[in-house]
Image (cartoon, rainbow, N blue to C red; front, side, top):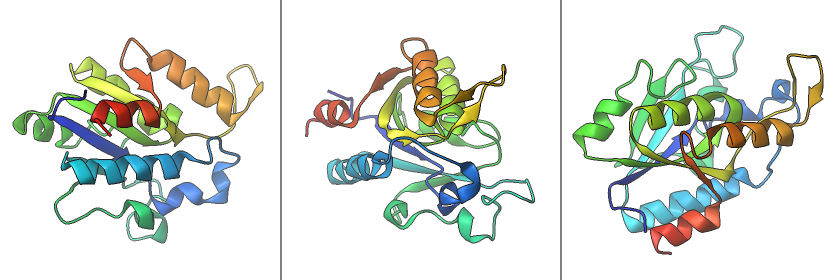
Amino acid sequence: MLPSNTALIIIDFQKAIDHPSWGQRNNSQAEANAVNLLQAWRKSSYPVIHIRHNSRDPSSPYRPRQTGNDFKKEFLPLSNETVISKQTNSAFIGTDLESWLRTNNFTTLVIVGVATNNSVEATVRMGGNLGFEVYLVSDATFTFDRVDWSGHYRSAQEVHDMSLANLNKEYCTVADTMTILKLLGL
């Protein structure tokens, strides 16, 4: 069972992530799985924290006051849910996320969102390093194709899988949606 001081952290599920410039993605069910977790969290009255990326890059679809900065409709925060804005890839840098969690005695985090190898990975690493027990939901996050340092094309699934492998057992526990729901007691 997850302890009652477990927060769901939803990272960057904003309209910007659907911009075609990102390229091919993996895990087409990521949003549906994240919504299932969000509904379960709301039903159980556990806290939900929405992370909004406010890019400083003038060409980014995540820029404030642009349509892409808006949360996707299925992830619109409720009035009793916390929204934290960030300007870097980690939700802990330049924000009050850590102090909010510690002030409210939350020690366990369940993380979903985008992109696996960027904001999700940075936030998971920092959360683990700060001493939080972190669960990363493998099928409620996704990423995009990339060319690696050696110039080889890597599919979004390969990039996703490598990020999960880098994080699991050192910074977090990687689990799927069904496992998290069982741990939540649903």
